[in-house]
Length: 157
Image 1 (cartoon, one colour):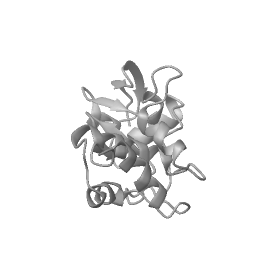
Image 2: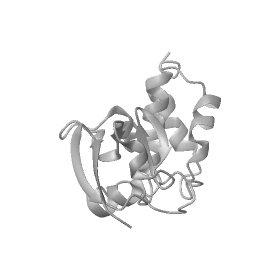
Image 3: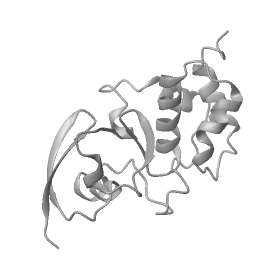
């Protein structure tokens, strides 16, 4: 198989990568760009550990070929903070003890970030539905829901 040149826009930066066309976005992020906040777990798109934002929407990077995302904006957990300033969702997860082992946290945080960007006042049911594709084996979800509710306009009323 012949390698190709691929240009990707990740966290606001452009990367030119020479790679095989059958590699996933997850492989490129972790192995080539060393953006290891995106986690590999099930490899089947079922757990959400590999979630990144593609044009602001959560997607499973283990299911996407890197060639499918050219000309799209990709945001990983590393791209949420502004310098040393954490994103409000990251801060809320810390504040509400919604992080234990941390393995699911990047995908959960990116999913919650997208939800709040598209719906600033989600109900608890909408929050639970949004994160339902992200598996957490440590927290039992209650603290994760609390962290997102704290940022919801509805939760602050």
